[in-house]
Image (cartoon, rainbow, N blue to C red; front, top):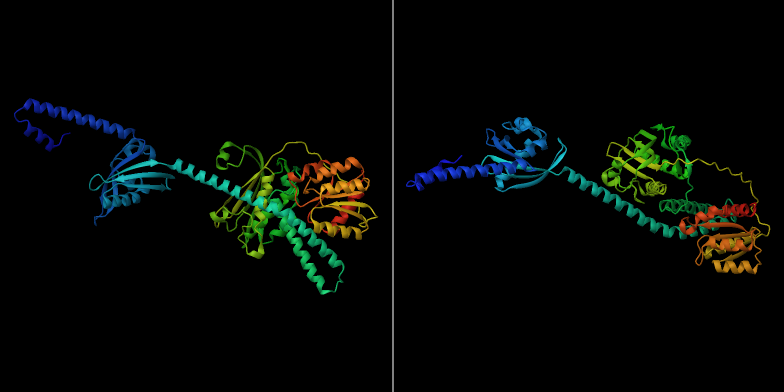
Length: 545
């Protein structure tokens, strides 16, 4: 409808032309009506929610609420309330969760005289909005809402996946570093353990020096265990995968778990007796369970409950949307839940990092959960963790189910062996000079006829020089010039009765572990003690071809 001022303007301007004046007024009304229809059409089809308010003030002149003057269809959809139930009502009556924000926004727009842009999460309706607001005239406010909930969730999920990728890359990088030093470190420990054993045999029991040597040996053994964990973490420690029943593995650990956890913590088991089989290294899965149980115990310093579950699960595509490292299929799930102190988000992001620990320096190395992570990854599985401060933690591990037929492996018991040699010829191939010299001396003392070589070329020369008459080849798998398994094959081609004992500081593709198993070769892991080596040598020599 035209205003009085507009009508007066046309009347004054067209006093002498009444017909023209009326025509112009008519045209102006038509034009304005068309513009109004266009404006209403645009607002009705606007994908953003638009709402217009008249502010309500209290007795002190402060804004206390707002009255809905108008909304568009998009706003109806955003709040899931029909227009008829909104117009003419106060914000407090219709959308109480919006009242405080409305008042704050009006104050900001009235104060600055400019439009206000903001992002706001309203927990009452679980939505995030982009909001543009302005005051077209005194006591009025217009707000335009854009729902960005899905977009923000997608951004958060992207950040979460990037965080997981960085975590994985970080662990892989440290794995390369630790794997690189583990082999050499095992060589050093072999020497330390060897000389410690010999020195202790040469000293009388009452000698005080024996106590010092004993401490050196204990420290070396602790270091060997640490390297063992590093090798598992870097997945350079061999695992023997066989069809296993996860529920049975846990049931066999019940007594040990109860001893470790203690009486002040109650353990509850919910074990599926119809659990699917999975290909596992039993000793490593036991290590995973024990590590998680000990980790839970640390979070239950004031007592509480530990719940261990097993069940069959089927992973679908919806699950993978949240956990990109997962894959669809049939899996066996191990769940370890505690009612302890829980973790902050910051700690949760770091718990699988090697050497990260919340314990005191003397209480732990920080390798427990990183070893768990690596064992699970080697089993083609994955692990998730959920935790909040004061609400405990839940670790869930997924192993791929396997439906192959189980084949039992029976081995004859090994009888006790006489450790001294009887002049047997032993060709010892080892690139570490200190180990080579130490073992040569010790084996000669034990009655063996020993030949040493630092690489494959010298080993072949010695073998030929002795007319292929060697009883035992004791060889490191990784040599400077050739792979130890290549040397084994070469020498066996000359002497079919040659007995073999191989050793290595770690086992991976480079070490040809598959070939070692296929050939049924005897193996001893570095670092080894002199006593363990003597047993391995006798067992290898006495082996029936």
